[in-house]
Length: 180
Image 1 (cartoon, rainbow, N blue to C red):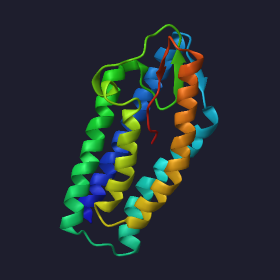
Image 2 (cartoon, rainbow, N blue to C red; image 1 turned 180 degrees about the vertical axis):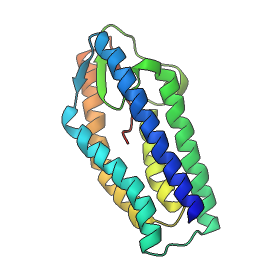
Image 3 (cartoon, rainbow, N blue to C red; image 1 turned 180 degrees about the horizontal axis):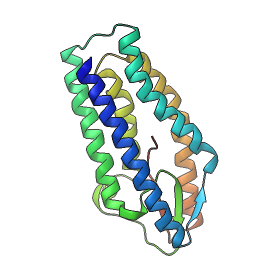
Image 4 (tube, helix red, strand yellow; image 1 turned 90 degrees about the vertical axis):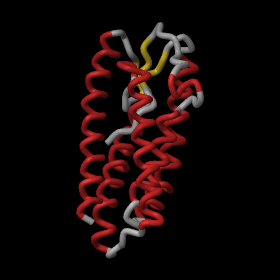
């Protein structure tokens, strides 16, 4: 369990790095006239992602969940792959990436990096991580709960982002992020 604790704490530190990056990028976007969309669902995203990390720590401890190598190692590989995809997205979008939906007028859509392959690649990372990270240590209730709560929230987020893209077809949204 102590190695899993370190893993979850590292993911939490990564989330803080995301928030710092997002705050800096939001300032960059706002200096360029960005308009924010979907502000209402953001607190629910923050709460859900925080609950994911808390559940990853609480469930294995409280329910005495074991580490099962046949499940844990593949889930660790998926969780790490999700992190790599997330930071590929962040690197590709540069200062346009954000945990909020910010549309900067006049910028063209990004069609490089993972965006060549998927419209919203960061959300693939969110979905994979939400299932894989808890399952590293058999926290199946956390994995299931996060997934079931994340799906409708993700649907709201995707509708919001896609609407933002439609209202500003020549703009690139500083989006596709997952808050803490």
